[in-house]
Image (cartoon, rainbow, N blue to C red):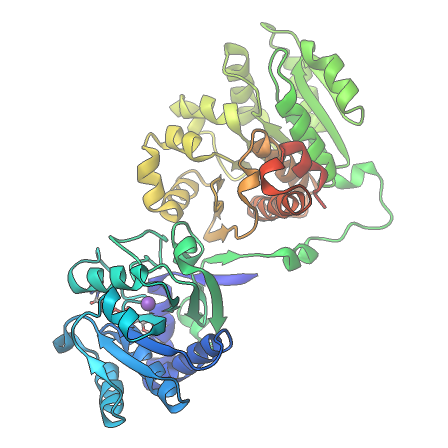
Length: 496
Ligand SMILES: NC(=O)C1=CN([C@@H]2O[C@H](COP(=O)(O)OP(=O)(O)OC[C@H]3O[C@@H](n4cnc5c(N)ncnc54)[C@H](O)[C@@H]3O)[C@@H](O)[C@H]2O)[C@@H](O)CC1
Ligand SMILES: [K+]
């Protein structure tokens, strides 16, 4: 598990280390600059000429310190100062004074592409704007970013590419497209969220000496996980039976439409469920029994609402998945409403269950801690009656505000899926574009359903690990088949 920080959290940690612990700001900066130089040098061949673009805040001061270290290490190095020097920080003034004493060339106009080519700079360092970015980029910063992007060089961003919001990953006007970003102490949230992830290139995280006590001041709310974190899932006891791993009830599929139910049930078994029961219209019985004989089937007839059966099912289930391919009809509206009122166990609400809830304010009021909602951007847009463009601007804030308001867990599915619950935010870093394929969401719902039914994870944990397991299965499928060829059933079969 790795923490991700936003600009406020990082500032609070910097301030705590400086003001409370007493580590001078310039000491942190020295380690930051040294670590960035080391990361960069490890990727360079020979001694290429380097142009360092420095803003006038502490991100720029890092750049000045880097220019000093590179010069001392015999790299031909030049500095371009961008922005208003009268706003420079104290650290910046000190670093600039040192560079002047060392006679490192410093220019105060904006180098254009022609200048970069003529002087054969093959590495450009972006130390213009870091976590202090607070508004749209314009003027000299905008020109400098465009000159950097236009040049055919290796680009290194210091802490975060200039123009990317550390909080949302959005491009504020324009942004540097880096090949390497060296993040100080913690990865900035904006380097994982799109489009910041694309602008960041390869990301290295280096230790700059922020003390563990900085967690007293602020503990980061966001984190990501990788393949190594799967080992932290609760172990399966060797002495067990099918009841040990939970019963998953999958309410899915509509008349003669059973693909979603099949994928969700298959994924639930692959993710370790002990027993999976599918509740679906009678017309789907034969095909589902043939495709997935391991699943138990309970069917219903369109137009009939079997309360007795539903009561039995609610007693049987440890967790439910409601919605994949369910359709929106009077029957399914009653079903979703019944389950929200009487299903006293954790459940995943997906696809048409979300569309039904989105259209009924009374149903929304029934949401709570038992519920994990898994909307994609279109479903989220319907749930909160806001356009997708509005959600994209700040996905973490949107996910958090929904989960806070309804006390549920929200899985906001996108190229970078977020899971929000309580005070935490999981940001998914795995997976690939091959997973943007029909049925992929049905597979995810089944995985989360199985983890919930295991009974050892909270809703937030089950959703976060479920998103991770699903993404890792997608990566295995893409590795074997190629991203283009991946289908949802390929993902389901590679869940481990
Ligand atoms: N001692 C410290 O505080 C440390 C800070 N570090 C560096 O300092 C950075 C943060 O420094 P700062 O807080 O000084 O901020 P930045 O250097 O990121 O930004 C400088 C200033 O630019 C202005 N600004 C914001 N948006 C702008 C825009 N769109 N166009 C033009 N100007 C804009 C703001 O007034 C801001 O204070 C980190 O990203 C990191 O690189 C590191 O050296 C580690 C230690
Ligand atoms: K930067």
